Length: 262
Image (cartoon, rainbow, N blue to C red; front, side, top):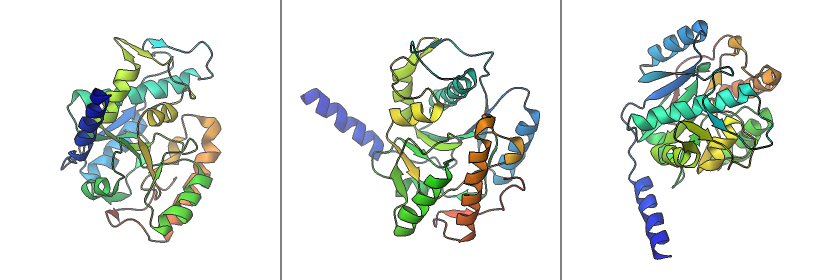
């Protein structure tokens, strides 16, 4: 019991001592051969001046070694997305980052964000901060019931879909690797939820969702899960309405309009 308490106290100390890098690294996931997306993302990040590194996405026909539950409903495309995010997280861990952003290659940067102040606003003990949600109903509810009442963060909910943009701490990266990495393989047999990237990553860590949307996708590229396109576009409508009210957090300054096709 004493050793358990000591381990918990050491972990809490690590969390409280985190320091946001002065120039937060952004790892962006992009499949080889998707030149239009890569070119757009390069331009989007260049105008912001954000430090960034491209991470080659896994593809359904080139997955790493996986150990899967006997019964699972995940498609090869969903598994490729999941493994791509795992690769990005391991890049940040290998680079020694204390915290880092992971974004997908269609995520626009419409706000200039002071990440120091964003992290200061986060709940104590956070491990992942989800900064983009694809679910129109959830976006509306978080904004009207929480954000406008002074609550910037909510504990992650299974309906808060999307791994489009999130801030990952080293603690979360270490936990994810310890739980799912087995040598050259990714072992997903212990995960009890859906085998999709957001559920696996966010459920395994202390994850909080921001109740104000800071990002939006460039819908000109379409969703990699095309069956969900209508849900993405409905979310974009809610995001644009929220932005039109001009109530963004004071650590986020509007930099530009959303992409023309968002």
